[in-house]
Length: 445
Image 1 (spheres, rainbow, N blue to C red):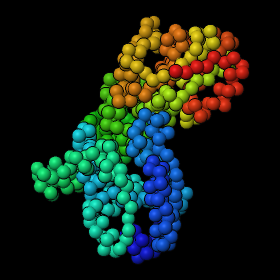
Image 2 (cartoon, rainbow, N blue to C red):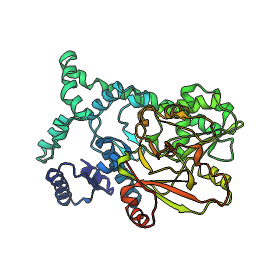
Image 3 (cartoon, rainbow, N blue to C red):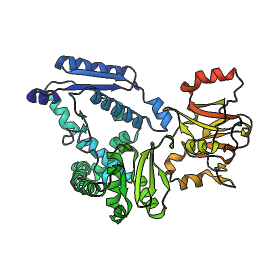
Image 4 (cartoon, rainbow, N blue to C red):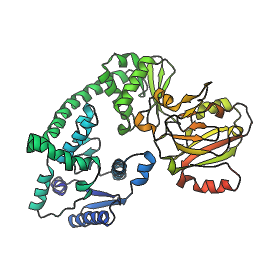
């Protein structure tokens, strides 16, 4: 279909395939099938191998989610490297739309989620959404075109496969064969309504931001006068449109938390969002910036190790502590925290947060439950199990990227200090080997 379209309009066309190598020889055969077909049709073929399991472990995500992230990154990179290619067309069809809407319904999604797979989503288009899988197969048979089938789509144990195999047949048996397509019609209705809401939100954003000299600033009084639903939609457009946060990382709960903070907070306060985005309230202005220190992605502690290196204490410990905050990222897969060397007691360990964990946060007299700190920082409960903590024989001294213990405060200039680095094992192995010869205090669970 795509080849016919490209030939009729004299447009450039390429095919892309990311082999996740999850099905061994079957996955390799899929890649070879694509390569052979593209050669037969004289279509440029771009292929890459990338296993999603390391990403899934590091983010505490499922294999399917990690694979989807890698595919979208793969497609974006291709568009960035090829000036003559302007969008990615996927093969999602009507049955995929039905399954997506049903899954989101039972997960409690909002209006945007109920619109399902959007026909146009940024640089990704879905031209086959109006066709069922059976209609596509019938067209292939009519044109004598072989195809490949991923067996995991039929007998896999993930949510989508079970829904396709177990739930949708029950729906058809109760409401009739045509009932299974109803969620797709619902998505179409939502699509029309959301287009109107998006246009209205964009107009409201232009009106608010147009009166400011900086694009990353909004007037609070006008923002809070809007209906909460419109204000939330405007905030999403503002944050994603200015590349302050990836669209997939900003959820409804974050937007509601922002509005609650703006209504209750005071001037000078800040709020950290997923990624490196930090909001600041300054009298009647809301500003946003990419912060150097941020909450790290959720992690599996088993993938990490600790390195402790002696360093010269900063000349101005107070200013240094403020700039370092709760620990700064150094690269994509490691975080640093500097503290006095004499506060460490025994071997350091990194692990994931557990229910009942406590620490004495920086600036407080007594200990607090980490679960209370999570609530104060509006960290969703679904993300808390992946939070990393560093402890010694005295207790927790660092909740990575979220809070440091009072005992890690740098009190006196010139005193000996250490920098604690938490990093992926692969990233730190060489440094750990070097420091083991100098008596560095390292350890892990």
